[in-house]
Image (cartoon, rainbow, N blue to C red; front, top):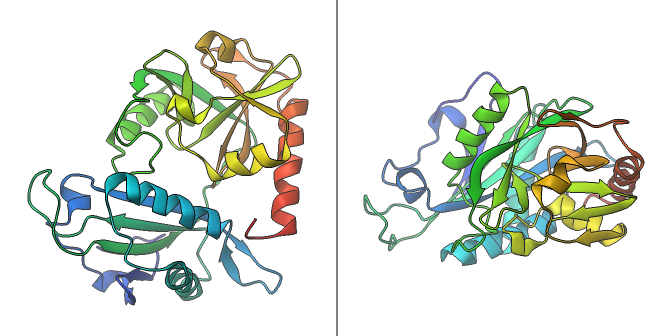
Length: 287
C-alpha cells in the first residue's frame, strides 16, 4: 500500500499503527483475491473539545459484527479494542480525517473460494470527507439487487457491481445509481438508502427488499414517521420528493430522478428529515 496525496499518513493494521508507506497486506489475503470481507465507513465529527471522533460508532460496530457473522468471519477484537483502534488512527490523522473506514477480511487464504484457516485482517484507514453538492441527481440502473442472496443486507467488500453501476450513473450526470431488486421494487443505491415522499407521507424500502440497514436510515426511522413499504419504480419516478441517506451524505435531497425533475428541492419532508438528523448529531456523537 502506498499513501496518496490525499490519503492517510498512518494506518492501523491488526493491532498496530503503521506508516502508510510501510503498510503491508498479503497478496493472498481473501479480501483481495475473492472479496471476502466486510467494512464500515464512519463520518468523522469533532467533539466539544475539537477532537475528531467517529459518529454513531456503537451502531457501526454492531453492524460490522452482523455483516461478519453473515460471511462467517471472526472480528477478533472486542468493542473496547475496536474503539481504541478508531481513536488511535483518528488521533494520528487528526488534520485530514473526514471519515474512517474499518475493513475486516478473511485473511490469508487459497486462490479460490475455500475459507482461509487462519486469522483475518483488520485494517483502519482515514480519508477526507466527500464534498457533496446541496442537491443531487440519481439514475435507475438496469441491473438488479438479489434480495435472496446469501449476503443480502451485509456490508461486504465485494463492490464490483457498485463500481459498474456508479460509473453508468456518472455518465448520465448523476451522483448515485439506484437499484431495483429481483421483484422489480426499489431497493437502494450503491452506497445509500432511498426515501420517497408521496402525498405528504415518507416511505422507504423495507430491509426485506435487500437493502442495507443503513445507520442514517436507522436513526431517522427512530425519530420520524416513515412507512417501510415496497415501492415500485413508477412510484419513485412519480414521487413529490426523494432523498438519499448515508454516513457521508447525511440527508441528501434529490433534484432529479432519471429525466424527472423534482421541485421544490428540498421538499418539506426532506427538510424535516435534515433538521431531525442535525438535531441527533448536535445531541450526541454516539446515538
